[in-house]
Image (tube, rainbow, N blue to C red; front, side, top):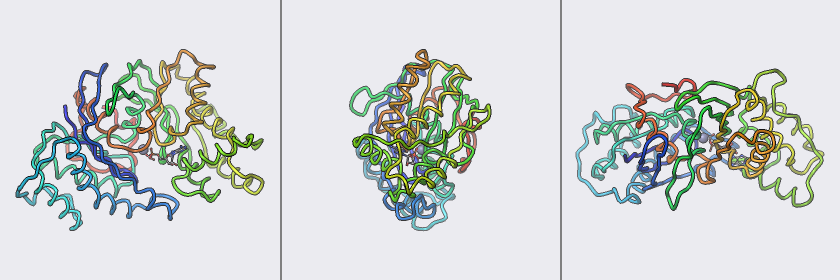
Amino acid sequence: MRILAIETSCDETAVALVEGDGGMHDASFSILGDALYSQAALHAPYGGVYPSLAKREHQVNLAPLATEALREAGLFSEGKLKIDDAVFVGIRDDEFKNSTRKFLEETTKPEIDLIAVTHGPGLEPALWTGINFAQALARAWDIPLLGIDHMEGHVVSGLLVSSGEKQYKMHGVMFPLLTLLISGGHTELNLMNEWFSYEHVGKTKDDAVGEAFDKVARLLDLSYPGGPQIQEAAARSRARGGTDIEFPRPLMHDDTCDFSFSGLKTAVLYKLRAMEEISETDKEEIAQAFEWRAIKQTKPRGLVVGGGVSANTEIRKSLQEMLLKEAPEVTLFLPEAELTGDNAIMIGAAAYLRALSGKKSEGELSALGNLTLSESNV
Ligand code: KG4
Ligand code: ZN
């Protein structure tokens, strides 16, 4: 099954062509084409993602990226189509309508079976751009369209293992599977007892962990996105022998599995004058605090981690060490480095698994900015 997948929930515009093979237990994926444009540098002066700028950039970049991905996949051939106006009903912006029309008029319908697009959670104006574009393609080419939860994409990306150049296969997954999502907008724990069934275990009461990294980075005069900058700064500090600074654990002091990061951010603010860089211990504690209680409580057979922050090498290391020491019976799944951040490959892979299981979203798609995984249960 060939899937054209689109991701525009935040500040990455991505289009991928993913070919899925096999069943739920032995699925494998060939990445036929993958075009991604990160707007991070454009948003850096604002210290975070600026929604109307993100939307505008998605509008400008979707058509060229789709052409690039199709070309890379060898699925592009020039066309001379006349496209009916009804195809563009969702698109109000004239420039965006024109670039989508031009793309469709100049591209022959490719050999694909499904179009998948992120429909939430994320910035609604950004999500709508991807949805409108995907909808226009689906209508013009008469190909089914599937809405995918961005966070489910991150879960699936954590379960993919590289099996060759532009090839991934799924790890054998055993349920229950605890999912830990740590990204710029989300920090949550869910328990999967089977595919596509998410039971809420815990979440952040305030900032997401990536957001905490970004805010602390701003306090430290490091540029956006803050995660990678803090990782580098911490490595330099470690190379000099480390630090004694300690911060409070980002756990809520109750018997839930919820977290809170605003206290950590405030602690950094107070310590700032006394410190040069954020400590290594701090990151290890973040990782540790995240999974520990949840593992005790839910007794999963596997822990899958996904989201931009899972790129952090110290967090990856301490998760591995912790699990080995405290719960060796639990298998840890971490995404390949290139799949930690936002991308369209994970959306295509999740769409394949949904399509295989016959779990499809019904009716017209709309942007669901606050979509949560437990709402994505089908
Ligand atoms: O999943 P993602 O690309 O976008 C969202 O869905 O939010 O995550 C982006 C977040 C940003 O907050 C960024 O600072 C953080 O992931 N991040 C990191 C690292 N790389 C990216 N945080 C810590 N260490 C990293 N190496
Ligand atoms: Zn993400």
